[in-house]
Length: 257
Length: 117
Image (tube, rainbow over all chains, first blue to last red; front, side):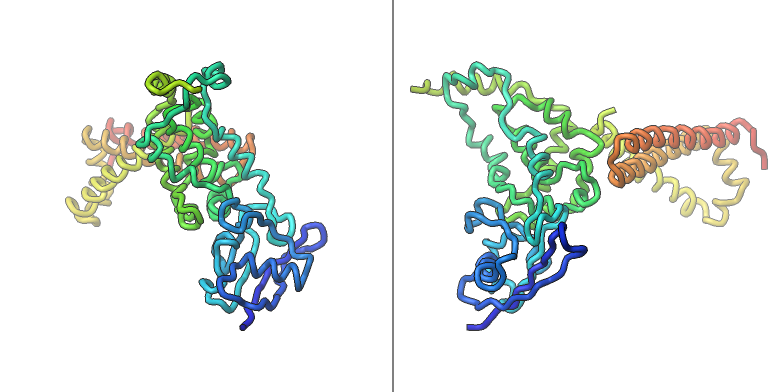
């Protein structure tokens, strides 16, 4: 069994002036992920390494970081696919570092919430006491399906050059989600969402670098979503007809029991 | 004005600028040899032709609107404070108005004989 050289960027903003790298030698095993290597280093070599993780199966989006210079999920990246000899782990760019590999995602989630990532409707009575399911046609679902795969890991936002320069830019994750809900036939929040993103620091500041789509571990294409969003906004469609479409579908659906 | 309208203007002026600048370059380098094209008398004769005067005025407006709007976008990305954004927007409008006004003055003067060879 050979060892892998694991270089971890260490930085505590409370005590350190600048980041430094700490090197650990981790015994390699078949199928070992970068997260496995980091956890080995933390458990057996240095308890002070700070990292965030949870599901270990690319579902929760907690362990996003820069690995060998590329933004990836640590649990979804095998040491072997990096050459198997040297792994460099750094925190994501475009976020404040809390400690070592842990970044502050507060602004990321705030921007996500700002664009109202949920179905907005005017018939609150129906929302509270539904008379039928909120159905969606399969072809309508297909339009937005890939965007529902987002796990909010922040890798796309970390890779975005505009986010790096414009602190008010919502970022690819929030904009792609805005498109996902704007395109939902059941949604009536078009105008509110468009008002929030059709600003000097909104959707138009995307210059289509495409790095967001290149790094997404779930195969989502946020850059595509943003371009479709631009078309949606430019067309002036502030969807309000969704309610009528849904009412027709609801009328044809079997009642809830 | 909504940012989407400003971007629509930006895209439209980009397309128009490609067409008008291409015509302009053809006029200056193909129809007339370059050395002749930039002679003062030749330029003056172009300005004094009503059709070309309108063409040059359109070129002036389109290129300036596109250019200054592009600079506005860069400046918005550079800093994000509310006062800065306000000054950038006001400054862009002023820059366009002053530049178009100055260029239009030249076109009008040349067209109506205010400039002679």
